[in-house]
Image 1 (cartoon, each protein chain N blue to C red):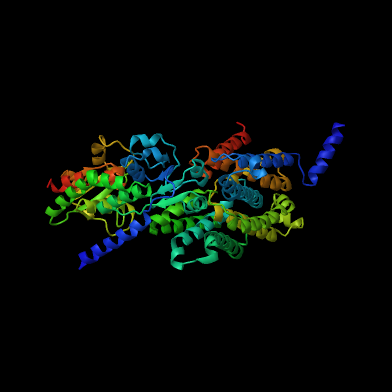
Image 2 (cartoon, each protein chain N blue to C red; image 1 turned 90 degrees about the horizontal axis):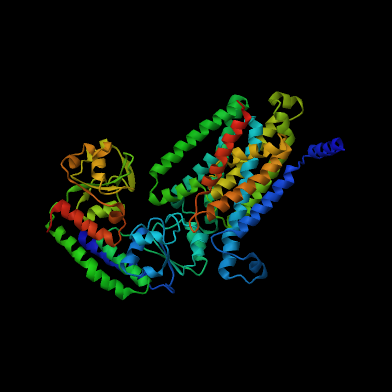
Length: 285
Length: 344
């Protein structure tokens, strides 16, 4: 019954999502607000149309050299308009709202991409951005050649999972504090994609968690994403973090370290990150 | 001849007019002109005046940059006026509009609207006013509480008002912190923005009532010059000299709350202006309140307009929070002032 309801919902959201993803009137000069959107436009090979990105657009490396409009949630109307874009594509959290209202009063088209934290959501996001940029066909090709194999591999891993183990997604802030992703966060979606069950569903959003509440939840696996740190030398540092050092999952080395944007961004990279995390937890199919 | 000149000058000064004031007025005009000309979008002012500018340039000037500069000017002016009047009233050079609970009260009002606004479901014509109105109500509520509490329980003396102000700020801080913890991601975002302060959301719909309110509040504060001067002798001395000190306190507190409240409601919290501006003006005009009040109104506007121009052009096409600029200018200046006034 639940699955019927679920698939009905998915079917409905497919319909509603596609209604918004129509080709823009003019997609010659595009300003992008959101790391996963920039990543997707590069993935589609349409980067020559980008006139500006936001400060969360850190991947690929080339994107960093483009004009920067500031943080995705703190755009400036005049700043965006000064780059003379014909189209602004932004993440769900693009803002602040008054800036969007100011931009909407000009001829510049504004498209907000829906956030859906699942494998299907990533495919849909890529498809949507490709259609908005008038390259629906090219998008479809890239999806079937690069992303579908990953999605299928993920599904294969999922088939052999009988009971989803408890896991927590920890964002380590580098100063010894840890944030855990609760209900309806991108972290929750990522844990689901890796066929685990989020230990922190008692709260919504990201909350700082103490060593005690982590021990109490005692997840079997940890997915750890360091903020603003190099991945290679973090393993040692993380074991020194008071909040997570004594956890069974850390002492039994049942943890995976991932890059924060590659896991939580829900761009094309998230799919391959989820495959490697799922393999680390459940073993290869 | 020189004697005559200085006598003429002091006569002009006794009318509440000081040579520094025209300089401030010129500075304000200069900063307004600079602010109009500078921005991320290149706008040719002559073309705009001839009507040959593009639609985009016209829209940016009249709907984005223009209202933003006006908002920065009235907020700067209100903050500096309120700071001057409160420093005079409390006879304390560290008094700041934040002290009488107006900023934290406004913050509490705005935060309450951000978190619970969707529950109440305000819509229609009132929607653009919901946030500013709620911030105004918060500012007025906190300041009125301070006023009545100090008046009923402690004879309304200045030291008690300061202490009650500190307690109210702490209490408002707790409530804001609690709402922050309870809010979801989306609410938290608009909340953080508002606490950082920005003039980017300025629009004529909310600006027109704001101009009216701050003009009335400003006029009330400008009229308190003599009372504030006599207040410096001490509260009872001022009473003997014929000042109704309770009326003075009431007018200053209500007008400061209204002026600052409307600014905080539209632009969030802009730091350091109310504290530093009066000191800056006193350096040139001396301590007479008539001049300091007028000078602060002019210089407050000029400095905040300049700060906002820096905030929106320095890292264009992005921008930095305006509070960062005002505090970066204000804090070192304040240190220098303390250094200067205490020669070793």
